[in-house]
Image (cartoon, rainbow, N blue to C red):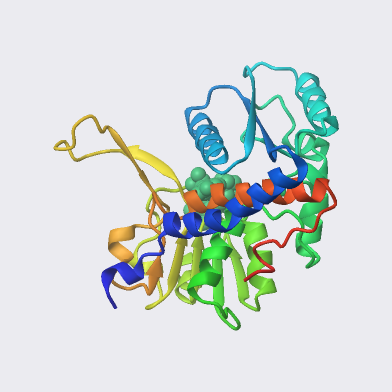
Length: 305
Ligand code: NDP
């Protein structure tokens, strides 16, 4: 296998998805004389969140999707934030609402998510959308697991019977990922920090999804030969290579890419793997919300695969 065939290039997959979405946004504008609109709410000044929001807005603007950025200071009262969400729910010109997580400790994430109208919940975290996903009739699917699933299906159209191990049980990644893989007939294991014999569990995986938040934790000991690896982790670490100018830190995944590369069948890099797909799926969900708002059917990417 050529080295490049091993790399699941998230940028290319994301570009391909965005190319499919673009004409739909053109159709929408022609039909309804307005752009699909995504409201992004950012609280505080966490540098990582600021970068994620910036990238989401740039991609929206490039893809005919209007963006509305609403910022609050870290000290904002919970009721002020909830009132803003209700205002956005009631605004007919806003089709998708995203509140960038994590939130400051004094604000209830649960309450914020529950306040977003499920029909505008482009992150797919509202209990209604979450429940529909687990009941097997998804509406809005959380963007990161949707992106991972999209790439997997493009690489291996039939996932039936594969042993999939997900490390991480968060609501944002691990749990919805498990539901998607289960719906594709994988045998799914969700591992976490209390899992006993994590290495042995991972070694059984035909598909290993790492969503841990621990830089390069997964090395060659965890990997079955010819496994497919989806590395969700985004970790910023200090750069040790002094020859690289003005580059004090770098992004790495939860998987030690160099150590596992020769063993795996396919792997997503960090950066350039799951990240771009997450944003492309957000555009997909926003467009879907805009069409749903007009009671206009929208073929979502899972149905078209
Ligand atoms: P969380 O912190 O919510 O969840 C981490 C999970 O990893 C938990 O279930 C935790 O177990 C588990 N875990 C932690 N340490 C270990 C360990 N030593 N062994 C086994 N399991 C462990 O993180 P998220 O799910 O939100 O994110 C995970 C990673 O993905 C992060 O690096 C994040 O930045 C990245 N991410 C990337 C996105 C993208 O677009 N590419 C989007 C979202 C996240 P327990 O439940 O027992 O604590």
